[in-house]
Image 1: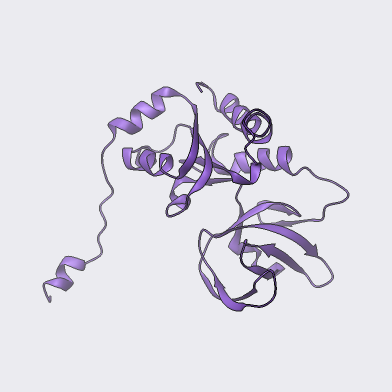
Image 2 (image 1 turned 45 degrees about the vertical axis):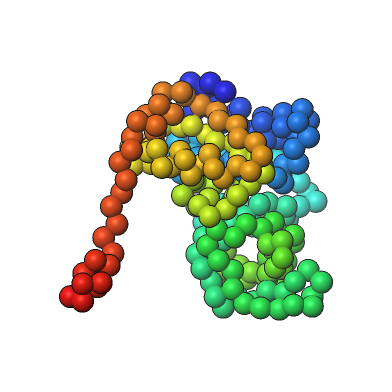
Length: 218
């Protein structure tokens, strides 16, 4: 879907997520994931998350919310763990299984906010986790996420925001990663020139791990 400006792109992504895909194609919004190569710009993940929150989970007297850093977290929001935490405790929804650990990239939904105990209850599908307000820095909104954060995950439907970004983020490998996250449906929205740039950019970032020297016994 060709959209030339960031504003047009963002509005189309929001409309697809909140109305067109659920109403016209029967896709449950819970099965949709928005991806963008960048956090910045009006069609990057930060701005898209704010817009999608307004469309999908608007402010209401029936919903509690808590501001933390740059984000407002609200009951019903989709959120993502952004760093490994091996110590946080969880239990299964049926309370028969307990364990520890929530990991970078895990996505869940805020079920409740308890101001008296200063905590959130978050459902990570198979893990029910209580977060103290002090741990909210480990969470980000997840209606939209960067392609980088989506690595290793798959989603029924992916909406890819094809927005300008730093050249390192607009590579063929990033485009391949984004497209292969979709299991059933992929919708690409944005400027075709950006996709062309990504296809032509086959440079890969080199990783300096020191592995060769270790294998050589140096």
